[in-house]
Image 1 (cartoon, rainbow, N blue to C red):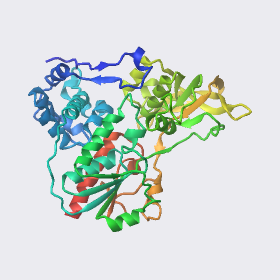
Image 2: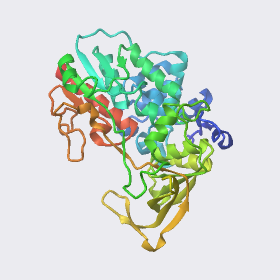
Image 3: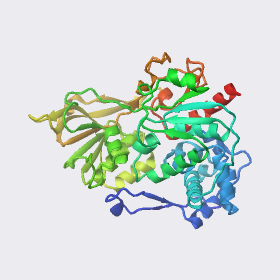
Image 4: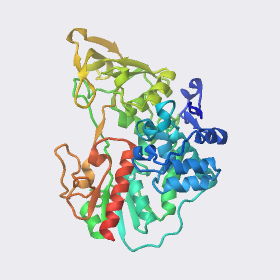
Length: 454
């Protein structure tokens, strides 16, 4: 048995920095079969335990080995409503692949790449994993069409519930549409996943700001249950002098303008100014997405992070891609002031070096400023990628309880809120997290809603 995984094809670094086409090209038939044949088909698969939505991983991989891709897709679809998305953006290396037995003496099975392969083949061949479901007469409203909302809606629809999703933006998909760049997750793939839910009978109403156009209280009157999966889209800033300057952005704005509004296109109505040098502040996946987007616009891009590369929270694969693409990493540094000119335009930053300390209770090493290291750097754009928090506009006029952290409060180990008919999950409950954890919350909520309404 080969201890090395089959490496998938990628777009060359020279070409991809000039376009927004997908970087990872995925397995072809031969590569997928070769990788699937590495699977040990464990009788007690640890990988399934590592998957937040408990996909029967050995079973779908066996479908690949047997040449029955339709069966493989049906297996995945029992647990996941968004396999083509998960295969691309889920941090498998920290979840299912981390638990893989093969990984103890070699490379873990590339579960994510195989899931993507199956999902892409299903889209290409128009497989359908569901049959006509008899409606049970119960109606559920879902607020938000991100991964939590789509998953909850999909599971409910598969069980006969009439589901209506309310989305504030003009396109469905939530963070999958506005937050993740085309080169990591093509929007055509997101649309295909959304279309598959529509085929199940899910109705999606866009341009509906819940909290203003319709309230949670009104949804409670019209529907048998309500699920809130409104995400966490409110950006955080550092609170340093100069953050109100022209040329300071949140990563949310940059990514939304590029992903949802096509700011990278020559005929864009919301173009991003092509400055000489930009700094992205942060070290997570959102920071990596933003810095790689700006690089593709022809901007000299730097990623500034206050810890070392070892502590970068972004996926290792994304860090490697960023390095290949020429992103400059300015580590163990943080800005203390944005420097502006008389027109309040960004012209630089005051920066201080950081010193790493011992790991804290969360395992992350502490950092302190080296007060003697302050220095100035030149730049024309600063992008803050420091995380996000929920924007509870949807909760206006409702009495749904929040936690001390400002998150929607749910019962312990549950998704039920302080309102008897209202459930919530995903980033609105946990704070900013991963796509797959939001999906896990959506599945959990669907199960609780079905238990209540049955």
